[in-house]
Length: 93
Image (cartoon, rainbow, N blue to C red; front, side):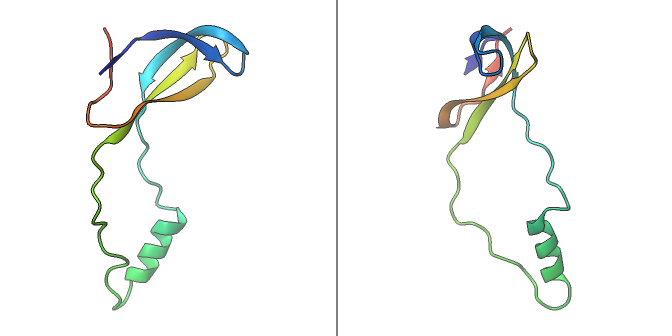
């Protein structure tokens, strides 16, 4: 699935339609300071073993997100394409 490099969409900060530059959403690495990570590390020390079992449900596809950056004010908006899908999102050349 291809998405255009530039899209003319509504910017909530400028409150008008402007040209937005599109880029793919990339998730950041998990923080070691989050409460879930700290709880899991604390629970694994000693003789306890695992915290919880693996999830049995496998997701069929992921939500494909596009980050739209306003060319005038620099405000970034997320846009989800097609809910859960197996197709990967690409930026058109």
